Length: 375
Image 1 (cartoon, rainbow, N blue to C red):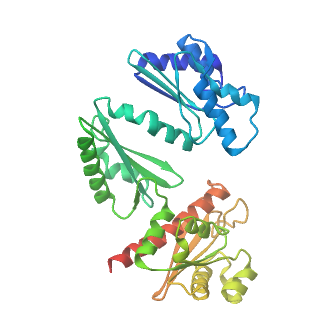
Image 2 (cartoon, rainbow, N blue to C red):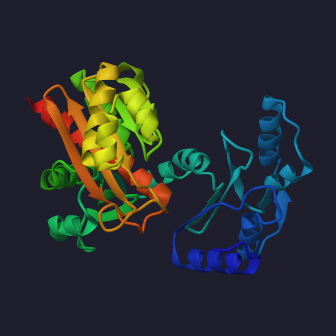
Image 3 (tube, rainbow, N blue to C red):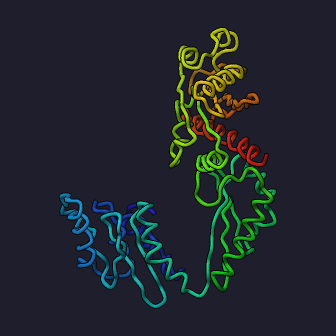
């Protein structure tokens, strides 16, 4: 809902009439366009008042950090009459809680980290006492498209079914979310676990994590488990693969070295890619990707070498042979080198092509590690 007082108040009123629980996020800041507290007061037909607990939370926040507090921050201590405040341990905006005749309205700051902590402390315990238990989790997948997932899980995705199963896609990662309900927490969690196991069995290798872990977390876990090490050589991704691998705590145990060899000269100087190879096949080629992967593995003294070269755009393509979005990912190890060719499409932005390429490279490494771990 937009930052318009009348529209926001009307939406809150409709939600309260239709639902037992209404949750708002955002609009609790110190600026003039932060209208949630005013809209709640208008929907409830009450006045705003300066709440002593909220004001203390705000002043204590600034005092602990020895920061100067603006007079505008005191606006965050205004709450609708009859409401209580929800403590915010991470920010300046207290939450608002209003309860009356079986209705519960809560408002949180829009910052996700703050909202999640406050929700777990103030709302989740109330829901657990409501007489119906809920449990939810998700499986994250890469390398299978959403339509194929729909076919594999079609009988489990009925809206009349418990648990509810649905998919969401973001940046080529598809999450399968499962929400189960039961008369007890144990029943809900039992239904959830059974579905997650069955979904994992049906999908197989494309599942890389349960919960909110990223693709690099899964790869890092496998590298740590198998004791293998990796070095990277990147052209079009500009170090993005190395960045993601080293985002994982403890990555110094398995990440040996990263090369960003963007120019032809750097590929020759740093990785010993033969200049004749580039002259014959071009920097964006299967042959150069292999040479980059093998060069970084040998220079990095690692078990794996990953080489990436491609055309991230928006210019630089040469259709039909080398269009924007053409990428090669090579994976080198002592037993040989595999190379993968991807046409990611010019519909993606430059950032999108780089993001998908890094994810493809992570997944190539993940799948080989899975096979290695089973030997």
